[in-house]
Length: 384
Image (cartoon, rainbow, N blue to C red):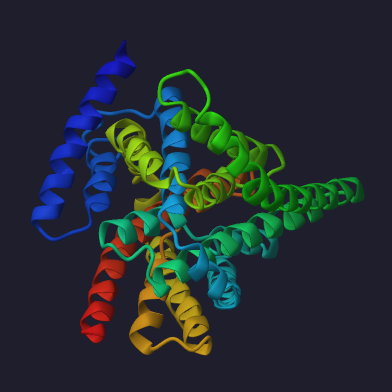
């Protein structure tokens, strides 16, 4: 019953925080993230992270990315796939180098520094997707490029993590790591075939089922099933969720599924996801080594902005569009937190360094929506 009380409190606080964020012309997600920080263990300690909140959070990010896929323009994603790949690669190389040099400067080992680089190479597509949706820019050329680049970024980060973690040990671990990468590639091939050939048939079948909201049930089965398979092969669940959303967006059921999934997601699960990110913030380690925290945070923001923005400019975007795309790639969010957690569990990161890294991830997650909203307004003003 304690969880029910915590969930009720979360929903009250995110409703108020979202309202006041909107009144102050800030992204709504900003208020939801701050609820986790202010009312979590870092400050007031009214809400504590729990297994159930974590589960709700996991479902929340899956639904959020499913909705992002539903609202994406497939033609734009195809058109800008080359740009998205260039942006993802350039947006990974510079942050990896920056974080690696930061780690070396603060006396981390070469491998620890490389691992920190991998953590900050990731991008949180879910945070950017929420702001893009709020600003009605998810189907713009910049929005499609950000989503595409963030998905490619996540894929490359997972492959890189698999390779590096496999290399840290004996030959048998390296062989196992290569096997996992081949399994992940096989999943991506399956995902493409299933999404564009099987999903439309399943959605037509759902229309014939004699159960309430059968189309929504089928959409949820597809979304959760593909997300589960993604995690089973070591990929992020958001990849399966995003592509299932894209595949259903090509059917006649897009609008009804979108409305129903938004009702399911935004009333409970998605707020839990954003609050849970804030709950992970701890201040103890940050106070002990605040210089490392500041350098790491600034480096992670600037390197991603420059790396991704430069890739966008090289792909033919204007300076303002490049700024928007770079800003949309700054947030690290859940993907970086997952990689950092792996580092903590394998003892690659000490408790204090882990606190600093998580703090830097959350600060980038807080700053990114503000940067993205500002740059979207710049692009819109340029278009008028």
